[in-house]
Image (cartoon, rainbow, N blue to C red; front, side):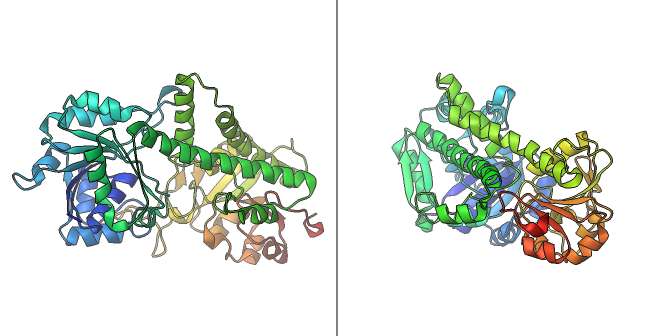
Length: 456
């Protein structure tokens, strides 16, 4: 495999992972960002993103001279040795949800306007960001250069395991109407030995949405099944174990929870609805997936009402609640579209007094977030933060487990119970063994679990 000269635009979650991992495969990578302070931190080896292995990989590749960081795209183009301009330019810029759910492509358009004329003939521009169908075609139109290939190469990275996913992918997807450009991008990943899907640009663009929306459907389905289990006296853990052995279904994404969120699924489900609407297709299944997810948040609030007051319509006014976990999933500090925060907002509207604890936002040697000397926040989106779980539980009438941090399983629940005003734990992730909670004298309320006489 030949080493390539690669420019990565954007050092966010996708861009930084892409740059560091491509460098580890032997390529010469220059990452550009408009945030001067962020670039300086990266040059010093400071990675703001909580992602296992990423900080170490950045430091390793920077020290090896294969990875560098510059401010601005023009500087990135000029940073390569004279006569050796980048062969491949990855666009890893934000594509947030815009008005009506459609993806906002202004960042992509801005980069093309800035560097399009400066790219060397034969350069390949790669859309790595999640973009609507037709973006590759639109990018080619903005470039107005037949000598530049445009490729769609969607990422399939999970937060909390991005480096692992990049270097051990299930598949590589490369889409372009330019066969040579597609093969050159696919060759960047040759060392990984992963199955490669070479297709047209539109199919590659749609593939990312199709994958994420299918996962969202699976999560909404299992949450609906958990509710049905509660109504008929079945146990969701047994049900999902049984169906998960079916290779057509699999075990992944079969855990009930407070709803799905994060940086991808919410915006991608709405974006695909926009694609469907534009094609005059009523995507009822996807719309129901979104509606089920929205309803799940209120269902959790109703569970808390019932557990604390004995009534689904009981008042939560001035009821103190401890929230364990605020990030949208464990292993990250990402709060974007976090179901935990959505539920916190509903509880606050109902008059509850909230105190939270999340391992991603603590100080000390066990802190997961490296803040370059900055202290941990005192609150997250209106939820005051405690330094530890026991402090958060002090005087609480119920503890809610909202994020599936593994350390919540091993908490000393007897100590937690002693700190609480009332012995109620609403585990929205089914992460803590109910028997452990009962031994600590706590009432365990989970999702889709078979009722236990000792809980009543």
